[in-house]
Image (cartoon, rainbow, N blue to C red; front, side, top):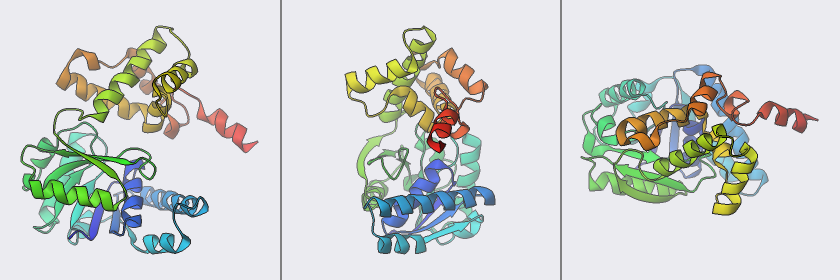
Length: 290
């Protein structure tokens, strides 16, 4: 029975996972080594609760109860001791994930399951960072977590049937639809999304059309809810570039990052989080402010 979940990393994905975990009835501890990041996460989660109540997604009583199930901590070792499931949601860099898994392996109880919120990296490799690969799996949530209905559950080479079944139940209790697949670089969604987003950048650098025209064509012509540039700016162009580099290494030339995407990241144009990516969000904010 999973009751206590620790989420490691209070960035965009971690705070979203903490929110859906708490609203799903789990006791959640959101952990980050950076206290200011935790403060920022708590403020944003409170805003998500407020919006949920305002738009009738959740009652005020349910919101208060969920908030009471949420704790914030900078002490991973202490939090790991009481966890039934630990979901790692740190940046897509092997050395950071390795440090997290080595720590939780040392301090988590024997029955605890481990999950990684990677969108491309190998859960088999990540499982090797600890000593319980049969209890390690990938839970690929999508941004924004509170709105996107899917969790892509990815089994590593040694992931047990029990682990896959337990994690599927957890995701469903969080209100998510699931697919359970076997590991291969990029899984299902990231392989397709990276191809579309990267091709859009090749189109842009070739002068085929403006970002607005390309996004509109994809949305209306292929029935995508967001255009590839809108989505790239939302998830972060740096994250998209990191995923493409990994897939290029593992799967070959069709995933070679577009030079224009690399230029944007070098220029600090990372998307919504930096105020400017393909689109300029500072101008949008100025218009909204007026």
